[in-house]
Image (cartoon, rainbow, N blue to C red; front, side, top):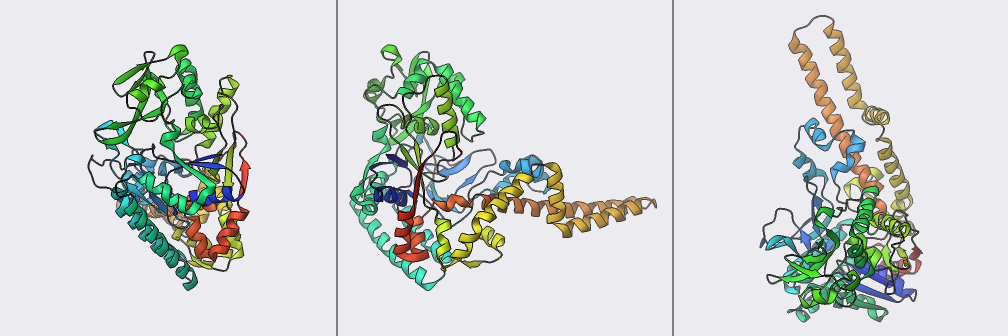
Length: 536
């Protein structure tokens, strides 16, 4: 079985996922992601300093996104694009902002950010075609942010777990982890971040998991992957099926630009002193990388050796193609993913099904194996007190609760929130909800409306009518503002099961119940093969 992850350290779920698999005797090769884009701080000029900042969306449709180093606060908010709420509000985002008397930028600034801290910086190297990859980051460059992230994580956990025993366990764990990190930083003073990740992971995993890098998995050379060969042999058909899958699953992923011959691959190259990735295209029967072209081999084979000779270090697939490629053909293996991980997997299933229906699937397809820890459910066994983030505290009616209370309530809360959101797609249901959920404001609006209608029969001065209308409008804005906040809260709570198997499960578990609870969590972790076309 194989596993591929970014952010390979003990504040992420990669460690428990691999420990659980190894504990079942599963042979796993884990590939540390070093060829993905490191970060995309929108609008940051090349050379701008790195920083830890919140994950969030931009009103233009992009995202401040970081893959190299991040921490999600305990049960915190996930980043959201407010445009996803348009079916629930019944209006476009720009119209919603106007109704609220705000700008779209203000709306995004308030509602989009997550409670995740991530390393951000300028993505571009030299031009808009080359992006820094994780493997370009040096350990010394990342060092201050690793230290800062550990500080932020510890502060968050001390807030979330107020009991003295929980805090003592956390303080002991963080002291040991900081000492380990300092030793690793000293050992890798001339190395890269993925090399540091390798040794950090090795400490927690032991010999049961073999570690490698994605750069080596997707290195150029040999005959090339069958999936790439398919795109080179019948580009219009393969790219058409890919784009159909993206559209039909309403994915946030970008379709291929078929007018440019865009392939679902990136080339990792050395560029202006950096390790960077750039697009790959089929251009007039040749593979094009930046300003260089490479003739196809016999039978339209990928020119992998020529690419390698030209300095292309790796040819990693884009997300959807990656999950098909690594599971197919003679070299394919089952792929381990956490529950609720890789939310684009429905697009993968759709694309694979289309390839299969067209007789183009490159060999047998090994399964996706989901690894499910059920952290939230396991909390039912604990009386440890936890301090909830604001959106959860509002839903639970308390800032601080025993863990078992959240463990018993979370699934119903999430289902009810999802049901409310789904109901808001219907205009009639939405109107009834607005009136009933905010009955106080609705009653004031109705009273003012009655007063305005009665006054209108007496031919009053226009200013009196306008004054009542202004009052109604102000109350309607207040009601809409409260409605948007309620939608935001429900949106987060409906996705609470993200934390079933994601986040800093190792230190969170130690805070909740100590080593015994964590070891039990690993022993009870479930694995199952995901049926094709099932939502992840």
